[in-house]
Length: 67
Image 1 (cartoon, rainbow, N blue to C red):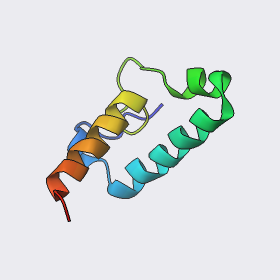
Image 2: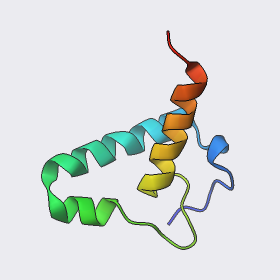
Image 3: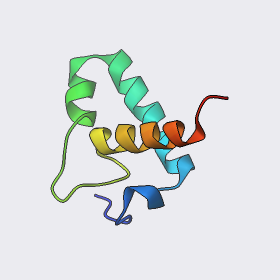
Image 4: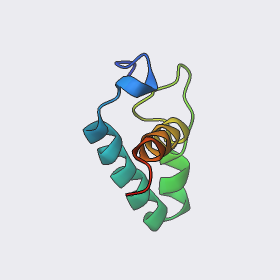
């Protein structure tokens, strides 16, 4: 369990990118992997919980705008 980060904007891009890779791999492996990886924990883990990682990654992409 990681409660290292107290705010989503403090999670480094490299940590988010690594977690996105893990989530993408889980999707390709099927329901057991998805059920394991796409969980919400209490307390929330900002660098692990799929919903929070995906949301923060989307926010950062939106901030970049269209290139």
